[in-house]
Length: 110
Image (cartoon, rainbow, N blue to C red):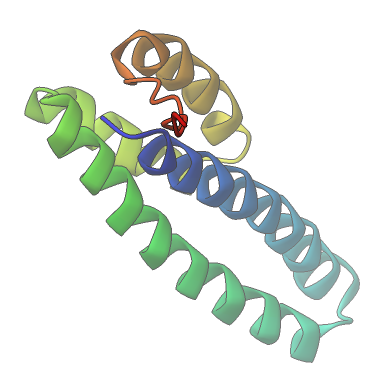
């Protein structure tokens, strides 16, 4: 497995998790204090797009790592639970790191 597959997943896991936390804060302001309805709409749309990209990258990683369906579903759903993606990402990285083929660049010989 290439390192880029894991890197894409990690970046999207963090972005999705951060945007979900921002969305939760925006919803507190919208429904608790009756302000920021426009900001909540924009943030929710951004999070939605990022979540779809996260699903694609997580599915790609899971299929290459040959995860069982239950594990794959847990990783996919973790993007919908605030702060869960941070913990799941950490666990996934520890599991996938040994599978990565470290490819050293070829050195040209004279």
